[in-house]
Image (cartoon, rainbow, N blue to C red; front, side, top):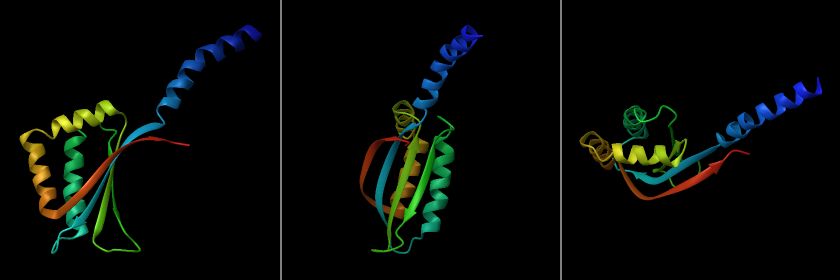
Length: 124
């Protein structure tokens, strides 16, 4: 019985390590200002189309739009969540296409983005 239990523990250990590795994500954060005459709803609608496009490279991509509740109004942030750097790179390559450039142009009509950062995120 002890041998069976030991065998199960040794067989399960690699699976547990793989599960732990899944708790790490790559997060790209964009800081933007919504252009005059444009709305957060327009930004969200365009971002939903962008997300559908980039999910063609990997379904495990998420995007969050964030508006300030307190402080300077009109500022807007995106947090785009990728499972790994390879997926982030694949999305950047897809955005170099004609369709991808059209999304960038659409965002340019809605927002002025002055910075972005790329983070490695680990769930605690």
